[in-house]
Length: 132
Image (tube, rainbow, N blue to C red; front, side):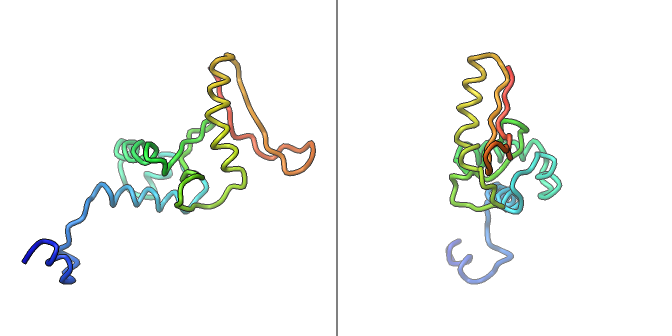
């Protein structure tokens, strides 16, 4: 019987899987349960070693599934990904504007911050912060 035939026969314990993909999916599942997570948070949630998590997060980041916040280094599922996580109403502005602000701050050699407001004259979120 071919390998494919053996897998389709229902022998779940004999099915071959890609362990790296399974671990990447574990990371995405852990991130989908929160708005953002530190490397330590992900380590505790998944049991995956931190060096392996960093490689997985870099791979997921390059593919556009995960981003890392500029200000605090926490990881989150990309607002531009079709995967979902706990929503943050400022996601797209922060994610899109954060890297631009970071580049501007590096050129200007000073600290930069921006705030989003839900009410006039009342900042509610200061997400992007860059120092040089």
